[in-house]
Image (cartoon, rainbow, N blue to C red; front, side, top):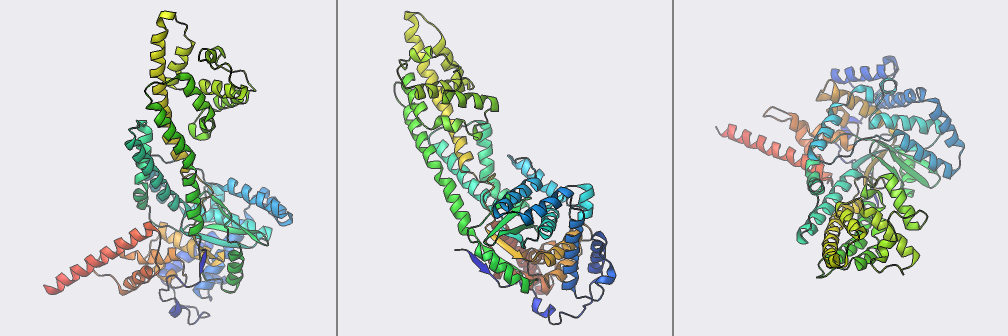
Length: 547
């Protein structure tokens, strides 16, 4: 069941801070310094906010950032926004897809622990302020998730489309990584039981995927933002190009209700839980394994047969789903080869393998479609080491006295071919059931909000994180913003504290966080580290007092 949580996940003295919403509170000098920097970057003068409370100041900062993004939006996007405003529901859906692909963050696939660590380090160290302020990333390029969200928010405002900010509390990638680890672990276990010799690079990759959930915890929690844009009266589309996610959730009515409520509570954060949809997606992926595992079982049984007949094996393979599997992208066939083999299978291209090879196996009387599939398979075998030997033995003319030797060699080559097919299908198992590159897995748990206030909060938080790094700023922001990213930043002050004494406010922050019942394993890991540090601090203090 999809749920909405309207409570403040982490209060952290919010009620106290809002007793006098119209009163200008004295701000910490560090916060004033960061606000001044952000105002300059969004062309907002100090005079406009000098008498406003912090919440209003942050909201105006977010509004100005969106306005700034509108001003630097390229003409093509402005024209597309007008087309969106005037377009039909179906055309709007197409435009959302275009926006996703236009702003999609391109990254290389990660296949080893070293590549993952490098990717994490690069992501953490390459977060300059030029990536979040529209006028800056317009000049320097490469906006981060917040920068891309600002462009999308500017587009939505020009198009007159209702929009919500969307921050994942549990990201789709986190669920996908855990799912893929389960799949990889199962494949390695199956290969070990059946004594399948996987290629070293495939085995190394599967072992990495099994270990990745633990390795991925190296990445600290960071704010992330996509948007939900209304494309029709009953449809909202998630566009999160930095996380490579776009699509629609099943419970659409919820978004309209949240949007309506958020208009009256613009600083409120709403929590939406879609874990059931993520679980369903994972189950669907696992269900796709069954036809392949069934074929693997049949191939395993066939390979253990005392005497193998090449013709019978070829017929079995041609009548199975193997030709369709090998033509999928997961097999990494060159495009030209794939097109050629596909055409042969359909009978629309001349076969590479002479039909007389099939006659030598007493297969000349089979149907045309089956013959085409067998010839296409033999063409593919020529790309494999064991397949080259098999086809070569079939084509090689021998005397009657040598026929028995060739039959023996053919049987051995067929066994080796089956072994290679079984090993390759284990790789195909992972490619079929994995979710790492599956764009359709949407974030299962979201924070949803009117974007202006939260954009202002996160601009200040980001600038502080990469420049001043003042502990006073996340503490001040946590008092006005209930978003869990800000709350975690405040609570993890405990981890950054090098002193033996930890302030009571940090203790209270942590206690509030534990009550929020986070489901993310990575966040649970952070909370455990905070708990351990608190315990050690208390233990050290007790020892010191006893002395």
